[in-house]
View (cartoon, rainbow, N blue to C red):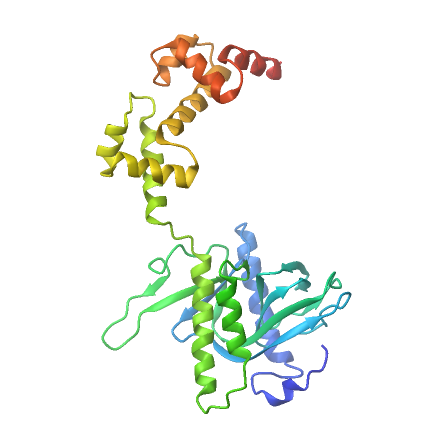
Amino acid sequence: MAFDPFLLKNPFYSVTPFSYNKKRRNRYFLEKYDLMKRGENMEHIIFTIPPLPVLITGGEGLFKKGEKHVRREYSVFDLLYVIQGELFLTEDGDPHQIREGEYIILVPGLEHYGHQGCQDDTRYFWLHFQEPSYGFAQQGGENWTELKLKKGTFETPTLYHLKIPRKGKIDQKAFIEQQFRRLIDDSAQNSDLPLRKQLLFEELLIHLQKEAFHIPSASERVASEAQHYIDRHYKEKLSMEQLSAALHYHQDYITRCMQKAFGITPGQYANKAKVFEAKRLLSSTNDKMSSIAEQVGIDDPTYFSKLFKQIEGISPVEYRKMMKRNIE
């Protein structure tokens, strides 16, 4: 491990943290082995909050073209965010490529190093933080309610699991980069600066958690409801009036939501569902065209053939012949 003078000035670090990091490594490998047995990966770091992890220090770095990260092993977490360029890092034998607008969280006790020189000048922010209690999981959470671990009382706080991806791409780059700049800015020598930075750091972690969520918008939820309803009823004579009554939304609103989410109208989605089922019947049965049309909710075989060709580019008869040739 390369010597860093900063290690001598910070109580959370040790130049030779062998016994401490050995315990961390052992726990890491045990958790990794347990997840691997279940066919899972250690894609998320889990923190139980409160309390939130504690910020130690941070800065901005630059690798010139051809330079690479030195070989190191810390006893704390190392969060790297690439502002410009690309980093090539290996941690615990796993190579990573961190592009502009992406971040990676390196785990305590694991050696990391640059396995390849930067292809262009690469600027990045880094933050070191501490949290003695953490774990790993393959899946993150969908929302804060799902991450609630234990409901609080009048005397104890509600506990949450903070599940942050170990590596991710940032959507709101402007906000994140502003937070990093404020975190590494030491120009204001106020006595409350460390506390203010801790609060900014907590905001940063919560934002990483929020970006990891996929919280559907109101229109996405309506589109999903419509999709599921059509999937169950497309074989019937389904009308927009029926769909509107079932979902309790106006017909025009449902149409706008589906166009925004899927790029097609409810009617177009229902037709695609009919043709998809027809393809299955054409390839797996010897039923007549009129029978297949009826089974997918179309009374007129001529209209069925026309719709099938419009969506698939070939007629139902041609599709059946093609599938039989493929089987033979």
